[in-house]
Image 1: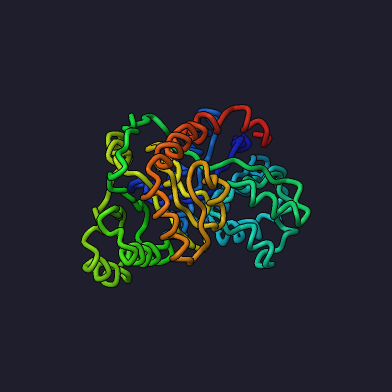
Image 2 (image 1 turned 45 degrees about the horizontal axis):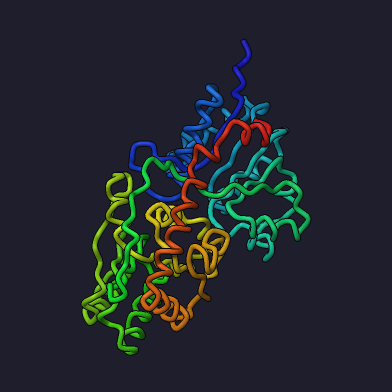
Length: 349
């Protein structure tokens, strides 16, 4: 008997044997979940397992060679995808889909880090933001589709929109706590706001794991800022914790992390009804509409960040207006609205 050909082979990092940690793993978990119901013959090759075992690499190579008539989806960061695609270029696979993780791929093509020719031969490239698609189309890519990031949205908290003029503005940062996420800029913006006499008109709470090599510096910076605190971890897999997040006024996201794409935390901010102050970095401006669902500020511009924060401190009615706009956008990013049979059909699956 000949080996049964799988309709779809999915290649990317998964969460086998551990929790859903990391944006790439979470995203792939939900893609695979939807694909499993769409294609019962789905085969998953977990690149996290390949890094741990040479035997898994050998088994996966033989599996690919036996199933060349399958459709292949590669959903991993650009370096890993490039390695896989260099190997696949020698194989007679007709339908290869690159589901891009992160926001740096188009810049890598523009900077000639990766050869455009290799990717133009693919059936489809799926990116998270229109700006990335526009860049690639400038380089004569004809195979690019935009599908934004998504979450399993099961709960929208009821927001208390009433505000008093003298009410303290509560800012929140919720992500990995790292210099590359703009945490130093937030701290410097707080100092600048204090110099402007606003120290009693706002608070900032950080949630997230602190990078080990940043912990001492970060904790030291907070000692002179009693209204700026690290609150540990908030697990948004527990839907009631969205009520806690909704108790804040504005989300801060001044990232300049090189691989940042459509960060899932921005969807969390929308769910909680928070206008977002984000940097003009990679895909942020595709998601946060300046003046409608938040404010876009230049990268590394502490004064611009402080100005945006002061705007919300002094204009509480804009917190309400933009927060309502943000929450009205949340369901647009529900996975059930995006990972539909018609979408999978559009990419020949």
